[in-house]
Image (cartoon, rainbow, N blue to C red):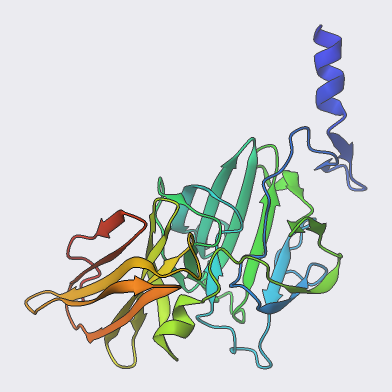
Length: 290
């Protein structure tokens, strides 16, 4: 029995050319991963020139200039629980990092984010906004905005980065252009709110959708949009609201096919925000102050 167990473990790994232990054939089926960007967007992935190349990690860009992608929305590649949401620049150079535990030993990494929209312990849906593309790293490490993406199995060891799969197709290493089929919703909350807005917070509404808080620093405005992920295309009760502290609440509610909002307010101080879809409701405390 001990030998049989050992053979099962060893069969999942191969030894790399530098002696690094690499995962070959994971023993458990992976989640149905999608590209970590909104539905229909096309991104250029690069592994060979990755900023911290180890094995199968990918750096993603889509803009025509070095800073064009700054603030673009990043989505969860699959459903799971946020295990890490922290700035880890001085520790490992990842800057603002989110790690999602998808169960079964599968983890996804989203690094160098400009904004983090979820917290450790939070449950997220596939396609939920979790942050915005950035260039955060360790002090003195000047990098251009991009998303550094990894999948790890069967644990979080850096030597266990495995090939990424999007929409059931393995990424064509080392470089490829990929269009997103991460289409739980057809809309990017940043595009709904308008130019200059970045996702800074997000909460799931059961399996019915997500409500999202965005910020535009140049105008000191917040925006809330609730995106449906169930009964999409059919008008059902959906709402979004935003309440700057000390002021009245603004709400957009009704029977909507795709989303409620955008609700945009100038908000120099704390805000309360939230929304509803499919009978689930989220209401924040007053937060994101200053």
